[in-house]
Length: 109
Image (cartoon, rainbow, N blue to C red):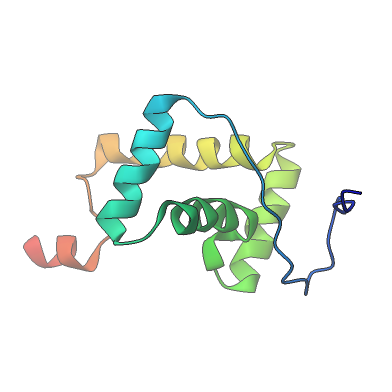
């Protein structure tokens, strides 16, 4: 008998499940390239990406809560909200040079 996977496991659960996904070849190559570039395996890379989206990329709780409140106020799902944020970054880059807010970028000016 196959164990039932809870819809929402307890927040402290460290239990892991094996899951299979069918992905287009180009996406698999992209993920493998990303893994190699970081010196990580494919599983660790996929986990990092998905866990990052799930946990707001490890941002401080106060920031994550603000982002989540903003997302809900805009009535967007997580994916749509990330697109929204990236779109607005792209708009900002029309007015400012790439890397304008990096410490390395500010030293170049």
